[in-house]
Amino acid sequence: MDIDTLDPADEPTLEAAAALIVAAFRPHYARWWPDLASGRAEVQEMLSPDRICRAAFDEDGQLVGLIGGIPHYLGNVWELHPLAVRPDRQRQGIGRALVRDLEAQARARGGLTIYLGSDDEDSLTSLGGVDLYPDPWPHIAGIRNLGGHPYEFYQKLGYVIVGVVPDANGRGKPDIMLARRLDDLPAP
Image 1 (cartoon, rainbow, N blue to C red):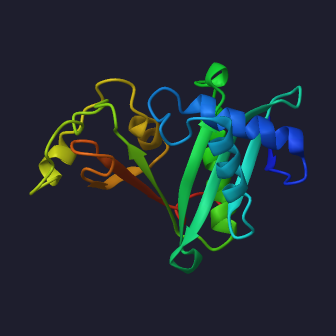
Image 2: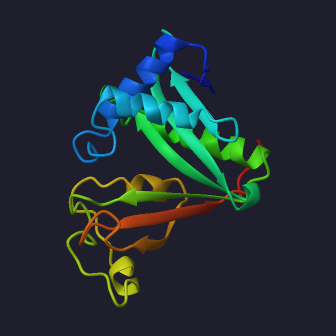
């Protein structure tokens, strides 16, 4: 597998990236990228000069994954958004490799922290369907994965839950916020 910056002039790969985003987020997050046009728009945003946009290619040169980074707080903090791996290639280390690559890219740009939001729109965790007000912390402390929610993937990579945005996607549909410090990683 090879990870490289997505080439904004490579139209076939950009089209494949748009299709990958749409496919990777079905069925749980289809409202964000319901069609190829929305996938294309996301890819174009990812290619903004201030952002990081990296792609994973298999040994045949086929696009198998994509990750983006958005700078915040004068570049001290980077938001991981989005991470997409082709559905038939998930659970093969591609997502892990893309996250590690993004961490190195952000760190090389002076980043100290990476954070991300991992929505729970379908009650895949014990936080879904729950009124997290007025005190979300007991719910966060007792979080359980009820149906393959990706927060545990990020925890295995050293990310910690730093909070939630209750009702981010409607009542009882929180966004789980995770973060990781970058200066405790080996130098790139």
